[in-house]
Image (tube, rainbow, N blue to C red; front, top):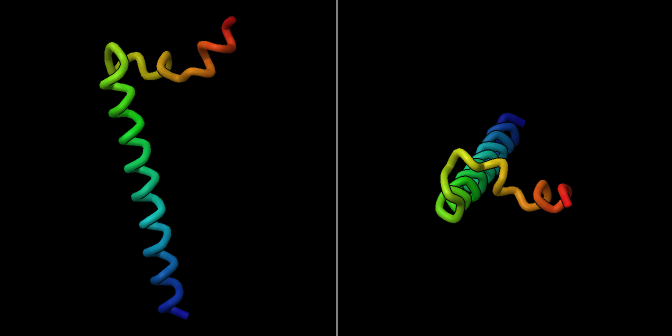
Length: 52
């Protein structure tokens, strides 16, 4: 049972690591393509589309 818990913990840690890496990648792409890192909210496309 303890072995299963350890594997589950490793699995959750791996998922969290992938999620953080994915979010960091998104933030970096927005920083490079946008004018500045401070315009993170304006880089989301659906907000721009809902205004029209």
